[in-house]
Length: 258
View 1 (cartoon, rainbow, N blue to C red):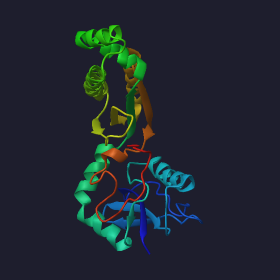
View 2: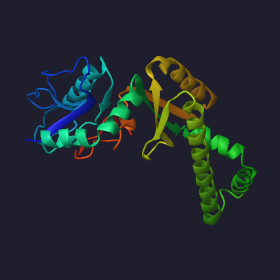
View 3: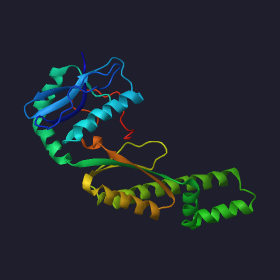
View 4: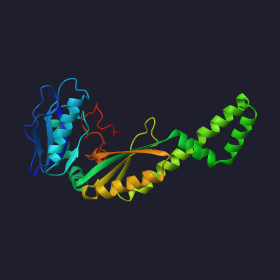
């Protein structure tokens, strides 16, 4: 029977959620596997597990119950090991590493920030800031739209200018928010977003961080900025960030939402 891994924590964790229901239908009972100073919160892995809402919520619920009383390294939804021995073997092999990560992430949460351009607003900014673009657009307008080659050239120049602005805005976002965070993790590129960045934030500094997000949003009206959190610090668990060595993670958690 494969083993589903929710997270890794200290064996001395004061309140491990043994016996509560986890993923699966019916829910698989949560178990605790201990190895030295570490513990893994696990259950039997259901066959054919997919990221359905019920199981995503169950995964989050187990992590929330664990995290309420102490630090936990959260695994992403779908992290599965071949068996219990594989899990405890990883705990033994990576003991120092996981202990360091538990200390580093104690009392911290993740906020995922995504940003995209408001199309009309950014086009206005690009045109206003580029005399060559304005001149070409005006020339085409006077020529009744311009030739195919002229329209193509204008389109290519606009696309290049917008892409350059996307890169600039992504850098500005990171610079504006990283001073309020303990760590930063840039997520994979995704369609429609110019920035997909996760920030590790101390729980007692969350208000300050969110205030910085609001200031950035107010100062950049040509951007749509979305903040998702607080989340377990998925993006700051190593190796991965999706799972410990020896596990597979067919599902994605929170897009991390990435």
